[in-house]
Length: 301
Image (cartoon, rainbow, N blue to C red):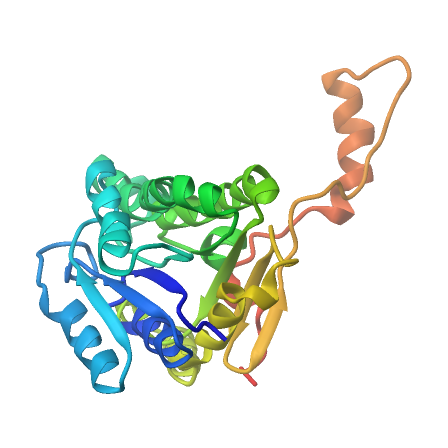
C-alpha cells in the first residue's frame, strides 16, 4: 500500500509512533524515524530509541534512517525534513506524533510547563508540517497525519497545556487541509486510545482511576497503526479535514464544532433579556463538564 513512499514519523522511538513506523515500513514505505530520546516530560536526549527502530525495520528488510532533531525548533524541524530528502530523494507523508506531558492542575501550572508542551505538540506540528509544505506543493501530493487527543476534543483534569495544544492541532490540521487541498495534499487527525509510556504517567490512586488504567492497558498501540497506514496511502485521497478516534477495534469519526441552536429577537438583546430568555432556551443543549471517560463510558471492543 505504501511502496516507495517516504514517510517521516516524529516521536517514533516508542509507543504509538514506533508502531506507525514499523507498520508503514512493513507496507513498503521508507521511513525517517524521528525521536530525540527524551523522557515523557521532554527531558534528556538519547539516540538509542530511534536507532533501535531503524535496526528493527532494516532487519525485516525495510529501509529507514534515524533522526534525533527536535520538532520544537524551526531550524531543527527543517533538518528532519532534509533528512528525508537527503536519504530518499523525496517526501510523501508527515506523521506528527511527537509529544510530552507536564500534567498539573491549571491553577498550579507554571509558565515553563505550559510553554514546553505547547512547543512540542502545537509548534512542533506546525514547524515540521510547514517545512514539508514546499515539497508537497511542488510534487502536487502529500499526506499530513496529526495526532490530537480527547483531552482537547472533550476535556480532562490537570492537562490544560496538553488539551490546548491538542485542540489547537485539530484546528491547525483543518487549516492545512483547506490551504493545501488545491495541491492534492490531505490533512487528517487521529485521536488515539492506547496504553503507552505517556498514558502510564496518569495517576491511579482511587478505585475509579485504577479501573480506568486497566481499561487503557487493554488498548494496544499497534491497533492505531492500520488507520495511519490507510491515511498515508493513495487510497485516502478523498479523505481530508477529518478527525478520527481509535479505541482498540473501534474507529470513530469525531464531530467538529457547528451551531446547535439559536434564538433571535428583532429588537436586540439586553443582559437582562439574555438571562430571562436566551439561557433558558439554550440550556438543554449545554455541554456538561465531561471528560473523555465520561463520553467513552463503555469497555473497549
